[in-house]
Length: 336
Ligand code: SF4
Ligand code: MG
Image (cartoon, rainbow, N blue to C red; front, top):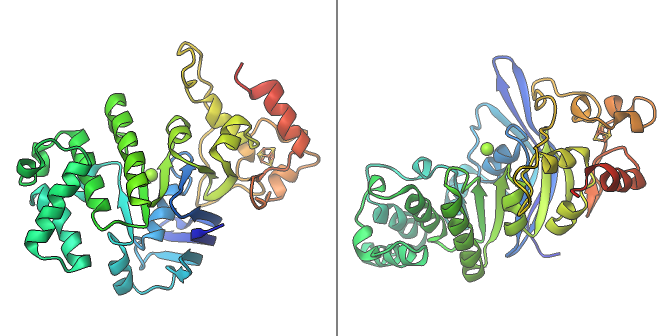
């Protein structure tokens, strides 16, 4: 496939007072041009760290990065910061959960959209301001010619999210990383922002990495899905495949703890028992084994001693046999 971004065996470690945190531990994935990869997992699964590393936004003093992050063949792990600065906000851009982390309260919205455009394209002030108005129009801000001179605090939460999207897309990036972009918004605004992102993806043709803890949002947004746990990928496939017939006990847990889409809201939610693993001292073997209710179906103590690997293509990193993965899901997990 036409892989635009190819991450290979990525390992990200932080040194802390308590020891080394293995935030990402041998992660590989691909993003195709113009497609959306959803990355789902609980907080602490490594999904945000992975993407900050792709953008080169980690602290080089305390962070060790190994492996490859190939963007059209260029390895971002070894790309110097000076060159990363030219890529960020230009070829690769990011939108965050909280627009106030991206928007400064001290400058007008228009100026903050115009700035990266001037920096990366060499446009004049006037051209950049016109571009800012154009972008505000594209993201659906009413009266863009007036609102371009507003400060972020004069915008509603939903409008700030739109403004941040305008800022991210102003240089027509090939890759957009969206980290929980709608989590802080109410359901109606959330749906509007997701629709907007889909429309803009059509127009701009950007590949998107969409990070979320919410499988409900992903079904609508992504083409492919990567499920992360403890700094590793535990399941991969097309969104359809993974949501219709998930093959990993952790994904089963995520699905059962999610309100049924369009289903009865009175259905009780089953949270995954236990808590996410320590990244200082990750569990031996399968990182999910302390929380997994299917370890007795695997012979011997393989779950606690042998790390399952994730194969290529449609795959789940779990010692259960292919048949077990299918029958357990159909008999016990599948929503009725
Ligand atoms: Fe559960 Fe064992 Fe599969 Fe890990 S390898 S998910 S512990 S059954
Ligand atoms: Mg996060």
